[in-house]
Every structure is written in structure tokens, then in C-alpha cells.
Length: 196
Image (cartoon, rainbow, N blue to C red):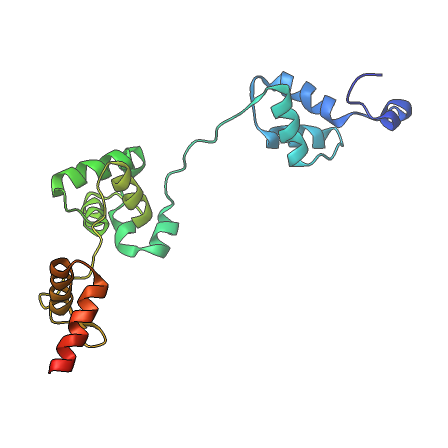
């Protein structure tokens, strides 16, 4: 009994679907589409799931026929951003967007923001998403500048705890360095307290 043919199918004379898929695919050439095979099998009265076709083709070494990139639909773009849809031309799909993002960023300088790049590209009639611009800029070496907290000028007078500030701690450290240890400094402070 051939490998891959179920026992019931071999005995009952039923058709092995995987074998049919392979035969039809061979007739179509190396690059095939699962939907073409589905249509051919329907004509023969055989119902097969798309996943079975894909798995069988993959195991048999067939390459799927590429669908190619679709140009952005004017209606879909118009629903999202009317200004962008008006700016999209016929040659927008022919432009390498990532390269154009890098070129615009280079022209804008090192401190470039994604929204600035998007605005420039809309003027040229190229629609790009903020995520696409951010990832392209990041890959090109443009790092996003993080906003941090500004350092305050009055750090020395800010209380740290128990009414102490930075100046008092620095003075205490200097005292400990002069007397040799924390214990000796504490004894000196206790003696000073008794005198005062």
C-alpha cells in the first residue's frame, strides 16, 4: 500500500486528496496558488480545505505564487486621512518609502521627529504611517530623544530626611573623615551636646 493513503481509502477505491493536490499542482507548474487548486478540485467534485492544500504543497516543495504588493486604495486612504488621500499620486506605489523616509530625515538634520518626516512626505504625495517612520528612523540610527527631569539648581538646600540637607551631610562626612570613624564622631557630638 502506498505511503500516505489511508487504509479505508485504498480499500474503498476513494481518492487520496493529497495525491490529487500534487497531481494538479504538477500540471500547473512550480509556482501555484492554493485557490487555483481548490477551483480545479471543485470541478472534479472534491472538497478540500485550504490548509490541507497549503500543507501538501509545502511538503511537496511547491512555491506559492506571490501576489505582489497592492497599491493603496484611494477609498481606504480617504476614509482614514482626507489630506493624505488627496496627496497620493499614481507613482506613490512605485517609490521605496523607507528610502524616502531616510532621505527626508537626512535633509531635516539629526534632531528629526516622525511627524516632521510625515508632513514632508505628504507634501510629496507619499502616505506613510507614524509607526513605519519611527521604525525606519530607529533602524537608520536616529535615536529618539527622551525627555528627562531637569536638574534643580537648589539641590543642596533640599531636605533629604530628618531635616538634613546635602550640605549637612557633606559636613558630617568631613567630620567623620577628620576623627576617623562614625563612633568617634558620635561620641564627639554627645560631648558637644553636654557642653552646650
